[in-house]
Amino acid sequence: MSQPLIAPSLLAADFANLQRDLNLINRSEADYLHFDVMDGEFVPNISFGFPLLEAARTHCQKPLDVHLMIVQPDRYIDAFADGGAAIIHVHYEACTHLHRTLTHIRERGCQAGVALNPHTPVEGLIDVLESIDVVLIMSVNPGFGGQAFIPHTLPKITRLKQMLVANQSAALIEVDGGVGVGNAAALLQAGADILVAGNSVFRAADPIEAVQQLKNSHRP
Ligand code: DX5
Ligand code: ZN
Image 1 (cartoon, rainbow, N blue to C red):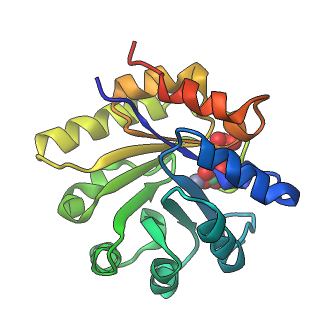
Image 2 (image 1 turned 90 degrees about the vertical axis):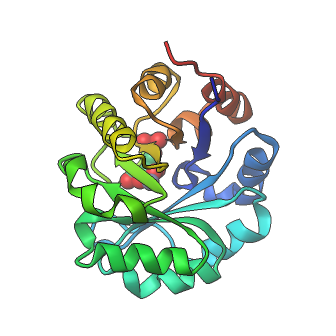
């Protein structure tokens, strides 16, 4: 059984000690650094943008997993590709021409991700599956770190996994929001491949150990 990929979320880092926290991630078994961009319109919060991306790219050795919680994300795909993103997630709910957007992300050499809000059914992806590298299942309403995991996400992941298998899709399943050692095994059992973890890593007594525990989570 393969280990999950772990993506600590920078949103939960201590920005007054950014280099220290990025070094913790560098020394950990994390596979990505999750980078949450919020515009105050798609979600009721504003996070950070290009200056922090530059700092992350300079000081973090992990590939950047960029989660765009913004309206009209097409406006910024080139800038995030130029900024070193490995994966760019756009929200399904924010894209009028999703196929075009995903194609653009791939043309820029990045992996194309689609994020789904908790109320958005996975079945809406059926006609763009060939253009998707990663599906990001939101297990909280996006906008804030430290929220409680929404339980109906688990059967949703199971349904998505079944849909991917039935359509011979190699897309990975990423889960974001309220993820920690308490629910990691169940998420993997349902079909998750990548776990985003903000507070459960950065607010742990030992963030490196917290990443390792998530990495060693086993399907029950
Ligand atoms: C929420 C963000 C998440 C957040 C996760 O809108 O997309 O990536 O940072 O934080 P935790 O793991 O603390 O729920
Ligand atoms: Zn996120």
